[in-house]
Image 1: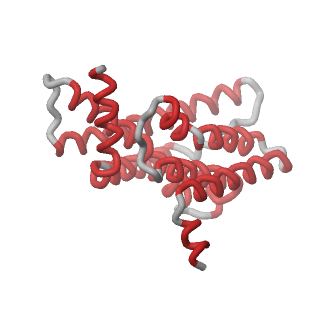
Image 2: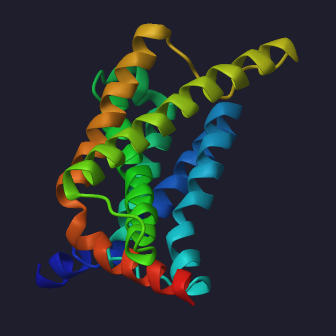
Image 3: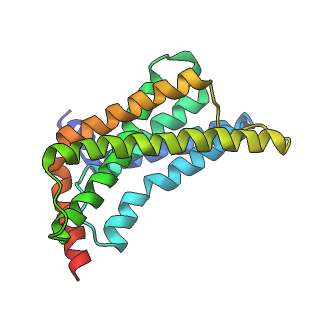
Length: 206
C-alpha cells in the first residue's frame, strides 16, 4: 500500500502512466480507423514530451509536476476524442480549463521574465493577473478560429474534419472555461512559476 501511494505521488510515474494512456487512445483510433482520434493522440503524445525537452535542452527549471500536469491534460483530451466529449457534458469544460491553464502558465512565465529583465517594464500584480487571463482567452480565440478554419479546409478538400466544432454557442462556452484556466494560474501560479520566470529573466540578461 505504501509503495502504491509513493508511486501515485511520483511525478515521473504519473507521466509514464499518462503517456501509456495516450498510446492506448492512439491504438483505439488505429483499430477503429478514426483519423481524428489518431491525429489528436499523436499530437498529445508529442506535447507530453515538451516539458522534458524544455527542462533538458533549454535548462529551464520547471516545477516537478509540470510534465505530469501536461501529460494528464492532453490524455484527458485524447480520451474525450474517443467518446467522452459526446457522452459526458462536463468533459470538454474540464479539458479546456486544463489546457488553458498550461497556456496561461507559459504567458505568466514569459511576461514575468520580461518584467524582471527590463527595468523600464513594471507590471503590478493585479494587472499581471488580468494579463494572464487575457492571454489564455486570446489563445482560446486563436484556437477556436483555427479549429473552424481547419474544419472548413478539410471539408473543401473532401476529407473528414480532424477537429469537431459544435457551433458558436459551444465555442463561446469554451472561451469561458479558457478564461477560468487563466484565473487558476493568476491566483495560484506565482509560487510554482516564479523560479522558471526568474531563470528566463537571467537568460535574457545573458
